[in-house]
Image (tube, rainbow over all chains, first blue to last red):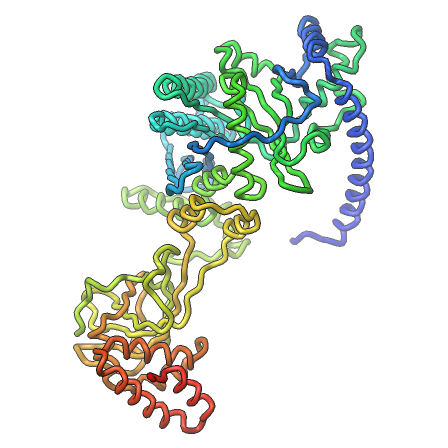
Length: 407
Length: 203
């Protein structure tokens, strides 16, 4: 049975009308948020308000300014003449109950770009196949979830970044390690050994910080770490605007479960009004229990961020750039990160070149997945193992008309 | 049998083939050697008795979304260019039309009895092989009948390659002989003959 478009079309038309109406509402809220942002100039008053929310345990999950006025745009600084950018990204094959064997594979791609030099960039890939019960089953003997594989992959990515940065600590230039996605990492209860994974992740952060300390000591250059979030849908600043607009007596958990009049609005449209091409927002710190845990591990590990308009012209494109506090506290490091990431985005129009290449190195394409599956089947047969095909999988192949050669 | 040359560069490996011709692939930074109209040869394996001789009729570089994006961004630097050419496997396809083969040291100006296989290495022909293969000019008709590309350009380019493989004092005589042969082959199509003769005019 195929999709009956005559039944879908009226639904699509209703969807179009609903989204248009929603956009009008959001446009009005965005105008309101913009006016509130312009009035939000007093850093001390903002910090006092956030402190009040903390005292009342009001569950504020918005952003706190670090040390810069939030209603200002910060211009693009000059990039350092030379720098090393190391980007990492990952991909995976999830465990599949219908495959010949239960296994999963993660593949981390690392790309090293030498800014200001004509040197050939370096590329590294690290495929990692796991198939023993210790890795593919949880304590109840159930096959692990995709979330668990994602968590292990994320840890592998940061470890790869930390190791490659450490290996290049003798290079007498600033070093920027770029991770794809947010830096705050936490795992749910469905991830076996979640606590250990979180410790390994923090360990990789510490390793990067050690690289920074070694470079500072040996030749005075810095190691920065950033998490790059493309087209963020976060509303941290909007939450701050809501908190700031409340009357003092209203600063309670009940009033902060939503963003009030601004509910549904995200930071992006407000940032598009504030930031011109290449400009960044003030440094902000997300208020969350996860970030507090990072802070409790050490002040250098709390995560801050700024928004960056990575476009050169209309239409604008926004990124959220996260960094640990050892970077955010150093204006020169913030400037380097700001300038180098914008430069990277200009190479690819609106996304860092190094991350694009790391993603390309990491990605496991459909045909590679099939080849891996065939390789595993061949190896099982060579070791006198019965290979049972899932009827479900085989019937999908028949239904979708996929052709397989060499059978 | 022509000995497998160790000095001539391998320009790529066979991607797909038929008895009429084949396409070989290579990486983009490795297209220094092949040129339009150059003689190439390929052999299925060391045990094979047939060297397929062909002419390069076209070199193409595949479309790639990332390259397109970089061009649109209009902010290219040497690091990125080197990365694209040397690290990324941007495939270059070299089209070859078969014009004969060499078996047990004997030259045949016919289509080969079987095509090369996928991944067979493709080499440029050395000068001795080119001279031996072009001692007779019976292969000209195969080139003229090829459906690939501008045949007059291909023919002229091939004859100039063959002339260059000879000592300088023999080049003119070779081109004149080739012109005479073409006069007979293309006697029914004078504009085409004139065009080819202009292209190979040795003076």
